[in-house]
Amino acid sequence: MLATLEQLLILQERDVKLQRAQTALHFLPVEEQQIAARLATQSARFEQLKQDARHIESERKQLELQVADKETAIRKFQTHQAQTKKNDEYQAMSHEIDRARRDIDALEERELALMDQYDAAQKAVQAEALTVKEHERVAAGQRAEWQRKQAVLQEQAATLTAAVAELQRQIPPAELAAYRRILQSKGDVAIVPVVNGNTCNGCHMKITQATVSAVKAGGKIVHCDNCGRIVYWPQP
Image (cartoon, rainbow, N blue to C red; front, side, top):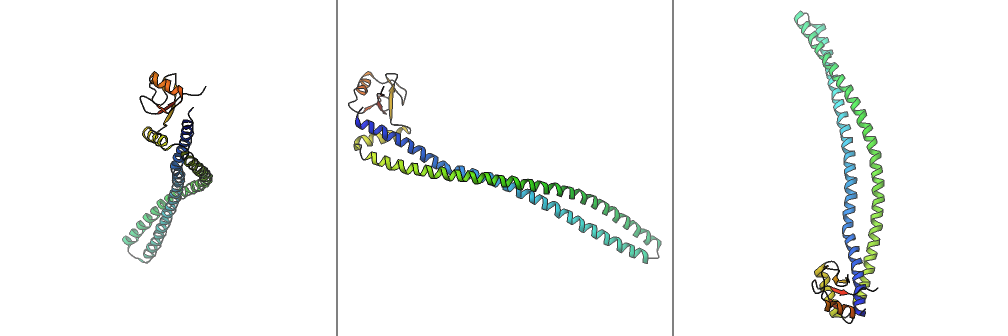
């Protein structure tokens, strides 16, 4: 195989590896965002549960205040009832006292229901706290792995970039420029083998017999008749 073609094949291999490393680095922030998003979702759920519990407790305390107000009202009615000498006023105070006591019963019944809800909410908060801690533990591990992967990829990219630069200095400028143009145009690879005796492995089209003969001869860089990629005869 032509020495320059061998160098170009090595260059292409390094280019492909470098592109993979750079692509992986490009998408690494997405992984970090996904980790953060999952943790944020779990934390938001935890905060919502705590807020729900606080709301229930606040509503229960409001009911306590209402019960206290009703009890104060009853004492006032009873005082007024004890002082009045009018029967109709006495009966009116009795009705007010009975109504206040019914209100208290209803408020206390609602308060008991809220106490049960608060207990359930607190249990949910405690359970979710454990879940959040587990998510934080998992997220910490994922971030550590993400950082390790980033460091490895950065090192690979730096090593490959240096290797590509060194190899490019050894390849004739004209052949290097042609390779780069093809690679940029095709977006995948610039150099492919001939397969099945007469088919370009890049575009999968048949090449002419003259091109096949030139590729076999190995005396020069040969291009596919159809896609323009550099083609070579694979070693047995």
